[in-house]
Length: 441
Image (tube, rainbow, N blue to C red; front, side, top):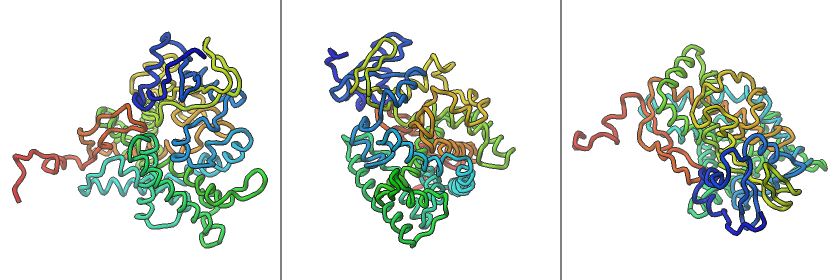
């Protein structure tokens, strides 16, 4: 690998979600590893079960410092759990597990999701024309902030959710003004979250024990010291922002429901039969397949802490090991009909243990949630997305067929329109109607 001269860093920006596929064309079809250069250093792109095992092996790789600083600072925040390894990482991670991963916490969230998504559904039925993406930012944002114990009106929660969503939208485009806006929204959010932490410590706010605001305000590091308010506020955001980022999955769900009316009918029938928007098995299966086929990022980086070898390819200590997330989620050796969108593959996966047992399903990371780098908010994400799927399956609504194209080079991406939604039958004669048949006023 040391003699490789071509640096592929620019390809991540120009090829986006096609970056991995481009590199795999350099080697044999079933390869598990392919060498390349990233930011001037040798790197190894890996995929499949073997690649996941290597990437998440803390004795051979580490995550600290592997993510480019532009991404780390904007998306996750300075000093966040995402930059930690070893015992420090596990200690900080335990609080995330307590506030987001435990089943009791997810059950506490679902009534908020049902209530807020019902508001968005009713707005569409009343003639609203928001996209599925924008509706998701509001509904999930308000629900998760209520769940996290945050104060403020519904409107204030919606505004902060929009700022956090824009941080997610802009972190991957450092060549664009959107990145600058993301940095500004990150700065505002860090200050706001730190003030909330200070208000709790000053006994001006009293969130319930077990909520994210309470737990991060009083979280202590391994030496028994409270985190600085800014760091605690960053981790508070890292407890709620990933749920708001699910809005991108919701936009993809709108597109897939538009393209697959048979699944829309199944989801609608299930929702009516169960009398609930949450936890429908068919809606959950659809949500899981969205996550498999439209992951948030195409790749994730780590440092090799020793010389590592996979499938005959080697990278020395100090090089990067890069997991092909999309290539693993759609790996032909791991999935039957890997390139087909088929929610039925999830209908028999009935427990969360079964989900985590699928080692090549890594849209929210892999390995053990408590000791590794798997996102503890994954259950929350699925609950939020499945509730959205149930709402979008309502036969009184329709997803409009404009703006459903996806720019696969942009990171992160979504259907261009966000998935426009309207009351069924209301689309004709509104802004998208024929200009020759509009009445003049």
